[in-house]
Image 1 (cartoon, rainbow, N blue to C red):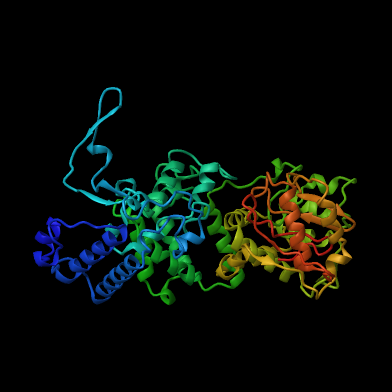
Image 2: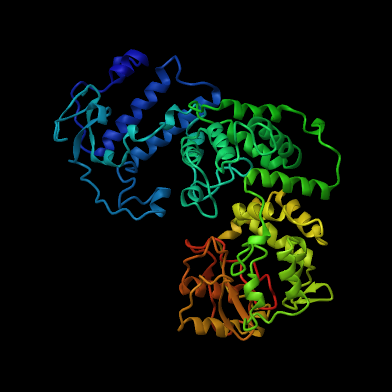
Length: 555
């Protein structure tokens, strides 16, 4: 109250009487709402920055006042909360305090530095009570400001901007330069990061120090020696080259990245990294000096960029583990499985042998081409059961993988960049790198979806998938097998996810995916409907399934 009187120019006549009692928490919140409006009306300096800012703060205060008058603030976050969006996402268990008698003494400056302890770490006192006041018990649900590294009201660009820096650690923070999720670095999933850069990357991303995060991203695989990358360039020079190419070739992703990096924390110790990106953004995209080369040459160039961004050493096919898939997305059947005469895959020649020899000789485009043909499902140049060519089916799968497992997709490109000069199907790899440049954000919403039985097709019936589901209801299956063929009946093979995403998925998830096949690729439903979700916490990409001769499944 003193601050409102001294700093906000609020006249004393606006305040309630010196001794005023509030009988309910709702009355107290209503008074608080009126005080906040007084500050907006009377404070002359530093309260608003623009007309829009004033309008936003006025509307926020009116909404706060309305909620107080409707008893909404004393319900928020508690079992009787029947109005907020958060009430639909959580089941509150803390009992609601008495609205008319549950008031407590609160200190707005109650933090560890103001708590006194003895040699036995027992609390013996607290200091700095000048910000103490009485308030309703509902304050229990408000997190202490000192628990936050950076409080939202201190964000220069508002609370919306502050909220965007609280990232989902299961996803890459940004797709161009910060392309590895915090969770993946912490779990070392498919990575071999070095310290202290792995920890620096995680901390910088969490703190919103985006220049520091990019700097750590360049160092995280130990490829920077004496300040130079393998090609002799400095980190800033390499970053500038990548930024120029992204500006030229991926305009939408580039625009999103620029806006993201403008929000870096003031604590960023590598602001020069962000400055490189912002300076490139100021250049006229049409005037950037890049050689006028064909789309296929651009695709090969991007493959090189991906190799640099992924920072992995060149892959030697001489040391392949032939008991495991060579690569998780497209070359996903191990050489050992193909050579096993007792396997149940019903592969055809000469494609099975071509698949093996192509991988061993590092002809990865040829290997992908053989992968599509070795099930005998390409008839007159089309994938059986569809009107798609091999390239069209490959393009569809590539776009899905880029949308749902971007880290694995970039890794696949880095592997394929080492293909042999003897590769006769480099156009296959060119297509994959061209897809890497596309905006596939519209596909991300398909990663989790619900479906029901479609009566328009008969493929599941033809491939005995309904019977497969029935069998899976009574028989457990384990998904950890290297080639992920976890259950089979007749000609129906069920495959789930990638090894990195499904090492521990059980039959319960597999059964859900089997229902997904039945619901999406379907036979006539008769008198029942199968409704399921294609999502499992253990396996984000399990909707990528395989229906026997329709090798790439339904998506």
